[in-house]
Image 1 (cartoon, one colour):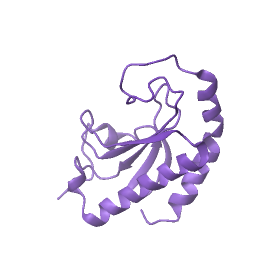
Image 2: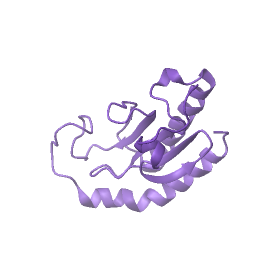
Image 3: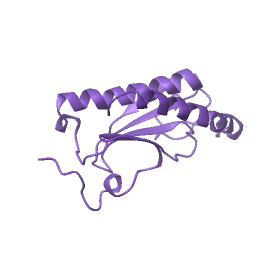
Image 4: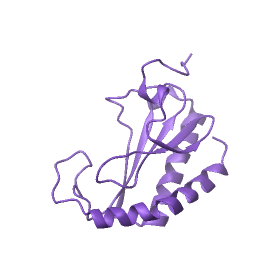
Length: 148
């Protein structure tokens, strides 16, 4: 049986970022990642390490939440690309990174963990920050219509 909570796991012990949406099986958080103002994570509530640890129905629920977050980012912010990742090397608790990427971000088109190719653009990052409340209201509204 999958443990619901593992002491010492940062995603069991804490939200993992600023909580945007909470449901029984998952939560959506905004991650404070410098240079990436639209970096979100969908975190599975129970402590599981791998995607295949979930039942097929739970995989569908989790991916639906990832898709909702992605679509909201696309609809509200119109990024150049969305990056999705479920790495878990540092924190082996299932979570998906959903990151809006812009052609002006310091690492684009490389991955977010690559070396910077240009200076960050605080003015453009601030413009995204201004849009964040509307973005997150939209996320909450769309996520709340589903049974997570």
